[in-house]
Image 1 (cartoon, rainbow, N blue to C red):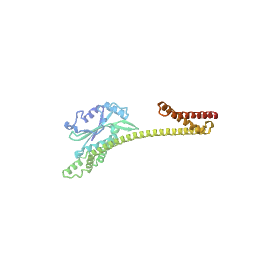
Image 2 (image 1 turned 90 degrees about the vertical axis):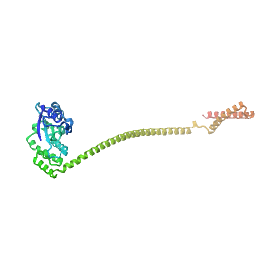
Image 3 (image 1 turned 30 degrees about the horizontal axis):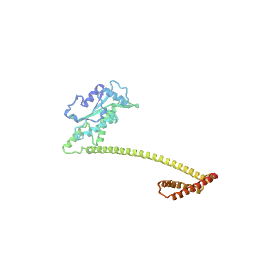
Length: 343
């Protein structure tokens, strides 16, 4: 593992070479295997030119004072040891990416420009390109010099190995030829005691990643369905609330009508009571009855006239009815005179 500083003039070349946009100056990559390469860093972090990188640093981290000859990036190449099981290369580089991000970027991925894993060359390795940002006196600064101090460089290798070993549950020695030779010799003899079970556990976990993603998708879909049901329920609740208000308004109107009806009934009862107690409104029951009988007789007499014209009854009967009518008319006149007198 080794780290180099990248200045403005080298950004395009270093980043482009790692992404295979620029022809590699070292090594002999096989173009037919380049499709196996992959980038572990967030794709939006990639910058192809120094100006793009300067603009990203200004906007993302608020660092406006950047010298023309400033070191804009650090390129660290980490190679997978020859004795490391090839079937676990993905786990190795994932652990390396995590460890390098913690060491060079304080665990913050927005400071990682790219982390290309190259599998199209003889030895699998990763190009980890980061922005040398530190926090000093409460503010962020771009300074490779302060980041790559003596203490940092002294502990870098052992710290990287320790972090990767913890991640993999497997002892990682990036530059230990004796351990590599010992592992290889034991494997040739059929002894896999130095092949830690942690990698097998990692492989088992990888097998469940697909299932986990499937369950995540189901959970997301369930959440969406629940949200849809919640929206429907909310709409029904709004409708019910509206109906409750309409019912309350109707109940209020009914109450008002009931009150008005009670007032009207009371006024009617009071009027009737006044009529019954006021002498001016007293009319003998006999008069009322006679008037009613007269009205009925008038209807009869009208019929009699019709019968007379049609010769349905005898003249004697008609004469009798006429006399009866005259007598009743006299009685009515007398009653009307008495009524006027009383008034």
